[in-house]
Amino acid sequence: MNWSGKRPVVHRFRRWLLLKIVEYAYAKLNLGLRILGRRSDGFHDILSVFQTVDLCDRLVFEPAAQGQIILSCDDADLPAGPENLVYQAVLAFRSYTGMDRGVEVAIEKRIPMAAGLGGGSSDAAAVLRVLNRVWDAGLSGEALREIGASIGSDVPFFVRQKGTAVVSGRGEHVRYVPWSGDVVYVLVCPGFQVGTGWAFANYKKTLTGHGDYDSFINFAKDLPVSGFFERIENDFLPLIVQSYPETRGILSRLTDAGAIAASMSGSGSTLYGVFESRDAAEAVWARFRSDRFRAFLCCPV
Image (cartoon, rainbow, N blue to C red; front, side, top):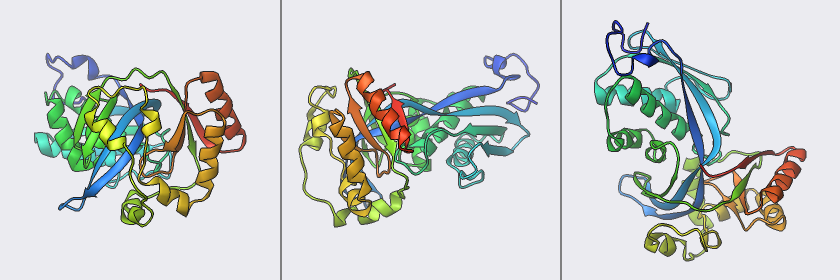
């Protein structure tokens, strides 16, 4: 069996036909997140800086019989059917291209779920990249982002796999920017999950004022790192702190340990501290781990 469902004639991707294909799907941090208003389509306009970090899921692709989608995961909590974004990405790609080839995808899950790190969206984008290559569809990045937007708001950003970008609209407007910050992140999962729908429905109840994050992002040509972290705002954070008071203690632990900034990614629940010293970051990470938190030490990629 091969990817195309045909005899392996001369093909510029012939080397893939008899091999498993491994693709990495990186997590992202929201380095700030502003909610600018509700749209007529029911979504919200946002402004955020997305940045991939070296925490990732590993996806293994193999060919399957014509029309089949076979999905498995090493985390039993992740659904392996049509509700999974990986499954939806295969369907969306086939609908867009008119192809009906089969694929089997095994997900090795490392990015926490419902944690504001975009794991499901990154996995979906990995599917679009691999199928575009292996099925020789020849779609542009713009076309892949269009497909991605039909799957989820964060998917268009992950089409490029790695990088830093200013993201606006509901997530479909992606402006990649250079990044020169040599920082280390300590990610802490506080032990609860946050549903994105719930967060959007409730954030206004605790929203308190605005700072200069949005003006800084809008007027910065290349997003200078100098002075950036002191401007970070996340409009969801007051809601999460109010609903889960333990959040405040974790943020305080990060800043007391030397983090130059501490905030939350997306609608939560992952909290992160930004460190300029790797030794300091490793020490903080080790302390959270010893206290039985699920914690990660990450760098931008």
